[in-house]
Image 1 (cartoon, rainbow, N blue to C red):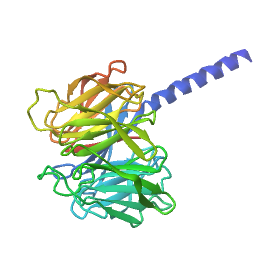
Image 2: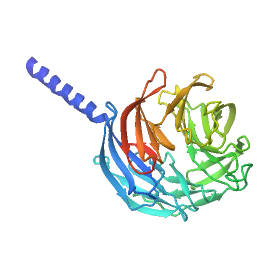
Image 3: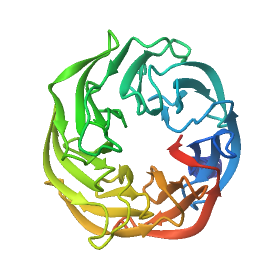
Length: 370
């Protein structure tokens, strides 16, 4: 009886180890521009223990599926089609094989959709139209497909940079953990618009206040919340800065603005993406043209940022990047050098080390894992 029990325990231990090994593998989804040789959304298997990867599948037939978002249950993936007369598409996700099956496509309600987000109920998809300066909210049907937009909001205004801020340019949609506050940076108007989501009606209502202003010419772009829910940060494309905010329901109060580039840098200022490590200790931002990620440590009590360093991205035009769920790896999508570069991350210092590994894919833009 004792031997049988020990044998059973041994089998269970081996099964547990096998499960752990399986859990080290994630599916990596890469949104792209299809203007060169890309065929659509690329899926790879990514191992969080080794940083190794292997190709799995390609979802074809969409023009410029640049930005992606999962539903909370990861059953569905939504992708913009970044073009004139823009659209947003829905896919079902086979979690076993990592393959995508297109369900349908709907109008984004404006030109050049560049960002998409799904609310926490899974009932509403929001898409931001950079070219049109608008955002739309679309209902999710029972099968995960998209219905016709229930609302499209057109932003108004401009700002001081006549070349880039001649009209509104919605750049991202960011839903707070309460699933009510929605913050929408508009590069063209130097405002972070604030909305309240009505999940029953599928409507975005103006917040109180209705917006928070950035410095003239800053160009707010991407936005992230700290894991503790107390702080939020926006990266500003045109003046290469990051602003930190104290976040309270419906409100942002700025406490700090820092530069993402060295003081002696004289080249183009062209920021893109921003992310915080899973443990909340470090913040990273991407600098196109300077071809780097900037690294800051985060004061856990105040949210203030302290400069740690820069990491060359080993490519050209780091559009978006991601920190994997374990916090061990940072993957950078270099749009104009057609590669996703894999860095290992020191969880104590926040610094990055090139692994020598890279995924070759044409014009990568957005990285998501399942």
